[in-house]
Amino acid sequence: MTFTLGRDEIVIRHMYEVVSIVNDVMVAAWFVAGSVLFFSESTTPVGTWFFLLGSIQLMIRPLIRLTRRVHLRRIGRDPTGESSWDL
Image (spheres, rainbow, N blue to C red):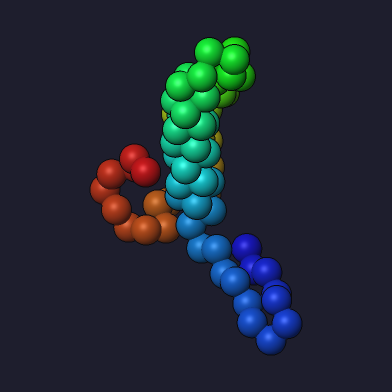
């Protein structure tokens, strides 16, 4: 995947790895924000929702790995040449 920004290009070669990393960062953000919101009793309900969002995204991580694995099997090879299929 290639994005053009003026005279520069951003090339994403390992899309599933990037998606997994972005998901992990978002999980961390939800849990950090939820933890901070638990310091005040008035913001505890919002913090609870953030923890729920983080938990849902934790379930998404194995789905990203499974999608990557199915895609790599469909094209018949692992483009990284690695023996482990885990991200």
